[in-house]
Every structure is written in structure tokens, then in C-alpha cells.
Image (tube, rainbow, N blue to C red; front, side, top):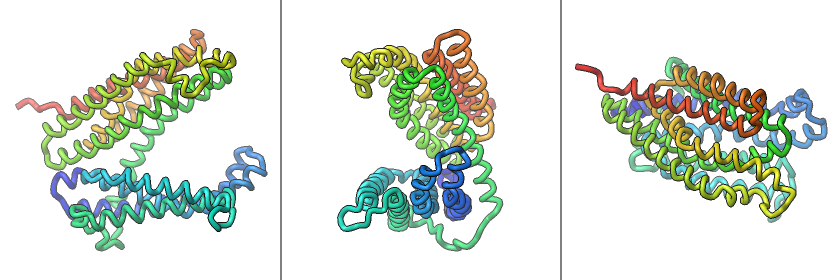
Length: 377
């Protein structure tokens, strides 16, 4: 995005070219792990029958590792060049193909052999190849994208550029892992509190996770727009792009907050039969959790988009550190104290993780402000 904003065509081509090499380098160890997943499952204590049953699935889907990573690379490439509209179309085509392939190869329909889980793995792998092929064809034919001939000199590996991409990617991966592992640990702690608390938590979490996809998408847009402005050396435009994205996400999440507050019971009713007395205790637990989650929507959206804006400035290391402090240092600690010693249970855990998210939102927005504020003359 920065190279595109700066009009550096050769740099755009070089980054995309090294992206393919990086995808290849990452796919090889991934394929090696998938080829031994039956042994991995046994080492993790899974029954031998489960390992034997799933082995054909992993043996087939491993061949989709390379196209899956290449598709992810092209998706980010097109997004950085402001040409992301086709992504949803290609994903829909791939999803439909995957569903049809799973049905045909998994169950032996339409004249195909019934391959069971192996058929599901084969169909999924083929769907990755289809999506990658369609996206590659799109980049080669699109009026703007075809001007960037990244396939020229494809054999040239540039270790410094690849190394820089690996470092930035690793820092982004750690940041994302810190955030999502917070929710994973909270889910584990919910299970300690009992199956009903866990069921209530899962009901609320699934709702919030779907809503979260909107600010997540906005964060990608913020990364691209801020990166392009950075390439143009227009910090005012970068600041404006970041603030606009944060404001749009916050406004959307404010609307979802109102919706969640007004329709808490109908939303829970999407997952549980409210008229069934057997569900009464789970519903009673889920309602206050959803209330806490609703009140945290604005800060959740702001922190995600603000982090995307920071990535557009190529600021990845400090957000990684700040994420650890906010999500684990504040969020998990507060949630544990509220949930267990103070006896608030699942609601306490939700309050804690919401405080962690809010802390991250405040920190990320403040850092974006500091990095983009006008320098005194």
C-alpha cells in the first residue's frame, strides 16, 4: 500500500513477487505438519480411531496449503491497491464449489466415489486451488492490476525484503494471537464455572463474533488507506483516513449496541428456545453477559480499526507489546479476579475481557494520534 501510494511500480511488483515466495516457504512446513496430523492427534491424547478416521482428510487437504496462502497473499495485494471488490465474489464461488464437492466426494453423489473425510479434504483443497486460480486470473486481466507484472523475474528471491515481511508478519500474528487467545482462555475459564455458564458464554460470543467482522473488515481498509497516504508522504491524509475509519466503525458498533440492548431476548432466542424450561438457567446467565458485551461494542470496534490504522503506518512492534499489556495484563487479570475471587462468575469474566478491549482501544487510538499529529513548526 505504501509503495502504491508512492507510485513505486517496481516496488509493488517486488513485494508481490516475494509474497509468492513467502507463501511457498510457509506452505512447506505446513504441509509437513498436516501429513503427520494422525501422529500429532495421538500425541495430544486423541483416541486411535479418531486419528485413523481423520488421517485421509489431512492427507488430501495438505495439497491446498500453497494455494490457500497464495490466495491470502493476492487478497491483501488487491486490497492494498484498492481493488478488493472481487474478493467476496471469488470466496462465494469457492464456497459453493466446496459445498458441492464435499457432498459429491464425501457421500459419493453424482457418480463420484464416496471418499468420506478424505473426500471432504480433497474438495476443500480443490476449492483453494479454484479461488487462487480465479484471483490470479483477475489480477492478470484487471485494467489496473495487469500493469503490475510481478511474474517477471519470478525466480529472483530478495532475502532482505522477505525478512522484513516475515518480521512484520510475525509481529502481526503475535498481536492477533494475544487478542484471540484472551477469548480462548476466557472460554476455558467459563467451562470451569460449569456447562450452563459455558453454553451461555458461547451463545453471546457467537453473536459478538459475527458483528466483529464489520470492524475487522474496516481495519483492513484502514491499513490500505493509511498505507497509501504514507507512501504519498501525506501524513494529514493518513491521519484523516485513520480517524474516518475509526469513526465509521464506532458509529456502526454504537448501532449494534442499541440493537443488542433492545433485543437481548430475541437474540438469545436465535440459539435457545426461550419457552423451554430446560433452557431457563442458560438464558438467565446469557442475558447479563450480552448486556456487558453490548456495552463494549464501541471500544471493541475502535481498537480493531485503530490497530489497522497503525499497521498502515507500519507500526507493528509496539502494538504487539501494548496488546499483551491490554488483553492479558488488564483484561485476563481483571476478568479472573471478578469471575472467581469476587464471585461474579461468567459476567465477571465478560467484564474483565471488555475492560481489556477498552484499554487496547484507548491505547491504540492514543498511539495513532501521537504518530500522526502535526509537528510543531
